[in-house]
Amino acid sequence: MRRRGFTLVEVMIVVAIIALLAVFTIPTLLKLRIQTNESAVQKALRTIAKAEATYRIANPSYGTLAQLGAPATKNGYHFATTDITPETFHAYAIALKPNVTGRRSFCITEDGVVRDDPAGSRPVNRAACLAAPFVSTSP
Image 1 (cartoon, rainbow, N blue to C red):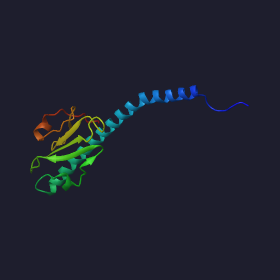
Image 2: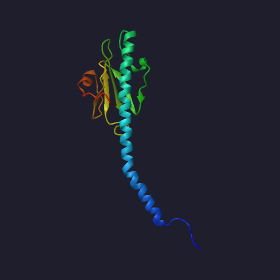
Image 3: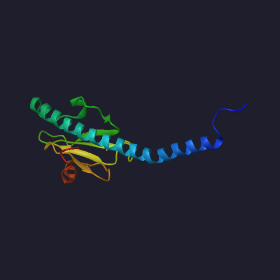
Image 4: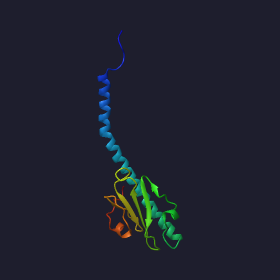
């Protein structure tokens, strides 16, 4: 009587192939996830800038995220606003888990231009944001 099934060598070959595929695909998937998060964060900051402009029309000053009804966390990033005056605002986003949910931090001011810090540090104020490099218009 002949036995049916796989030999140990055949099973080990299949496991080795799966492990090899995982070694090459997992880093690519993680990098893609980070790029997707960063793109979504840039879009969210542009939306915050538009909401700030709308809020400013109806109020004597720009608003906080809570006043705008914007979430404090989204897409693995923490969002906050600072330097809110009647004429200026500064909103930023930093990765909750650096190198996992995102590598860069982003900021925007009343000029509506998204800027980034490739090191991922928080742009501490509006002046630091204005000094940061521009992000391309097509995220």
